[in-house]
Amino acid sequence: MSDPSSITGTVLTTPKDGSVTTAKLVDGSVSAEKLNGNVIHSQTALATTIADADELLLDDGAGGTLRRATRGVFLVQPWFRGYLSSDDAITDSTWELICFTAVDATYTGWHAGNDYYTIPADLGGKWLLEGAAYVQVDAQPAGIYSAIDIDGTLHAVDNKYVTYNSYVVLQSKIIVSLSAGTKVGYKLYLPAANTTSLALAAYGISSISGVRVSS
Image 1 (spheres, rainbow, N blue to C red):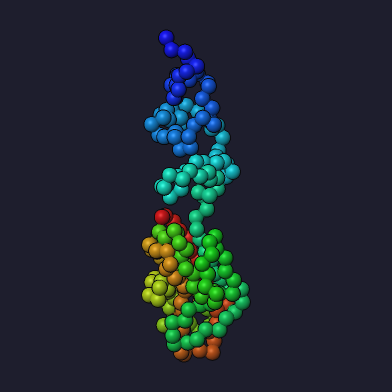
Image 2: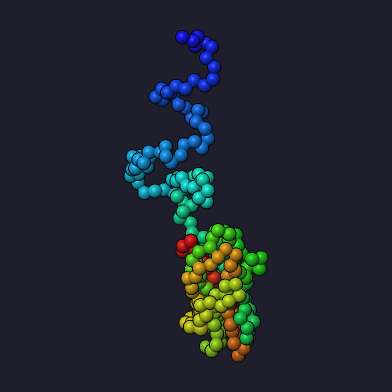
């Protein structure tokens, strides 16, 4: 029998139970084949409502990169809003893109002039868009319209309105699929006959808003 002290090379042995530590595992060596199917359903069930701070594990971009995320991340749908905080004169006899005095959004996308919002990267999908205008008039105007502007094309063109005191209230609403990079704005068309008496008014909040309802 050979002297054990003279044996060279790698000696393979069966590790004892509990003797394999994290340090002995090569990074990325634990694959799906090594996970027991009960890795989730064998755990103690959560007895309370899931909190926003609770964490989940996900595969970022389906590329094999695991990341943690809080429940709150999944609850926040991308949205944007622009509105007028004061009266604003409007040019007559043309479709005018409204420049809003105040804007906010969950993701950056407002143009410097606050006249349109660009759908951010990775946030394409179905969006609910809604524009509303409170227009001050001396008499009921004929031929007044509002519309959602999507990349220069008018959608949800509508001339139906209700009156409130000396204001005409218009609204345009649409659910539409938008790609990242799409520009969204709100336009009004005011007839020439009312040039001197039409203005966007802060009596009500003239605004545009959008929220992504699905990816």
